[in-house]
Length: 257
Image (cartoon, rainbow, N blue to C red):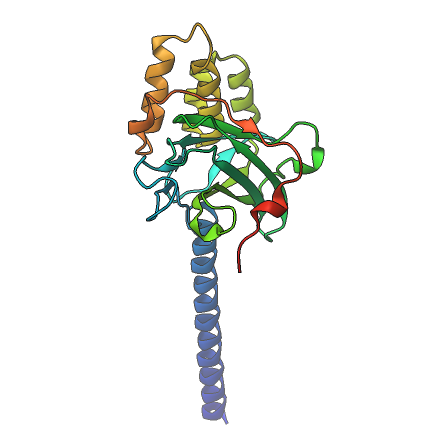
């Protein structure tokens, strides 16, 4: 009887060990998945920041349309209505070329869309969400997908030159917020950069760089910031003003079947 009891206890011990081992394997797998999901949410989303001209396109010989963003990363901001910056090359067409900016949420729902043109010169333009509508404000901790398309042929949107990327609005610690409030623009840009707040750093420097009394230190910091993400070749580009296209022209630029 005693021998039988020992055997039962041994079996129970083995079963418990198997259960604990399986539980450990499940928890280990869940941790790996959580780590992968976290990495994907930060860096795994694809970007395409340089768009060249295809054969017969409007940028065939004039360089590339470029989004001023880090490569293969979700750019972060604290702004509800952030600014995005793009380098627009000279086009090869005699008429003005229209550009379309689109912002969508993770469910692919349209948040904002606008059309604008330039005067044909190359340079950096800013695209910002309008302050007139609360519904277009970015929600905290949500990721948004944006696209900028240069419409080479309104009747054949497959010829568009396109750049795209991601943006996420985040909150910052109160201590950092207080430090930012006490800082000058150059110091704020550096703080934003250290906190990985790309769009805030870029906007702060762009605003100072366009000022009449822009200093050499601002230009140097602007160059440093662009070089840090491999866009140093655009540091000397001038800023140009985009021209909003009035009226409802979305139907004109529908994709051809």
